[in-house]
Image (cartoon, rainbow, N blue to C red; front, side, top):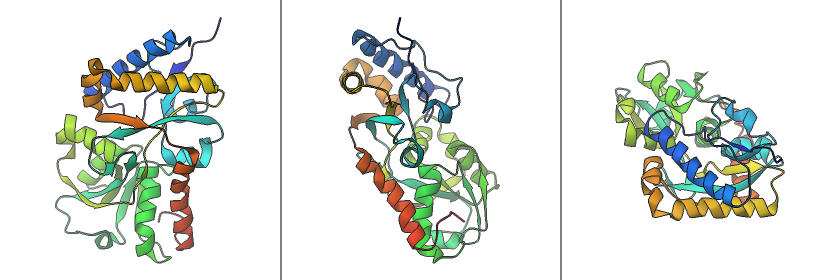
Length: 271
């Protein structure tokens, strides 16, 4: 008997309407995958650490950050599709990060935050670190730009850190911002957007590296069917998900190009 394959959607899984929508999205997708002959879990895996699951041999569906994909995962997973979100800070599959500050801070441009304390969610985050580095590299001119950096552990935590005065600036994911704006606007009280970073391809849906071409086609077809089904309109609206597009490994190479360009400008590490 074939082993049951599991799924995770940990990148955007806030408690409340978003988590409920993720559950319903997976239920709809799982039904279609089973019809195609795959044995998949009934519920999303929320017990395993999201980073570890990305490389597991029994992973059928997940979403990863683009920077870990190009730096660590591209030879170990397969791209399924890239979401298209309705939120500001992007167009199509392209997403930027928002650089934010406390609403009372006098700074109005990135330059105004030279020497200040920043919050990032993770050193391997595209939106929290890589795109932030790309935005600061031209200003840094080969020297440290920030005074210090704290690692918050998550984009919502970075927003909290800025609001609570633990950091003066942060680079946050625009989908996280959009979901909070839609479902929990009170979480954005006290902070404002200062700047938008360069844009790159957003967080892709992925499957395990051992997924066959036939299985990959099934997943892509099932996902497109779920998104195209009017019965799922409320699910998609809750997630801000308008559609998906199939990108290639070459499309995601641009995220590594941001790293290389920062190195060429003498700013290899966010500092």
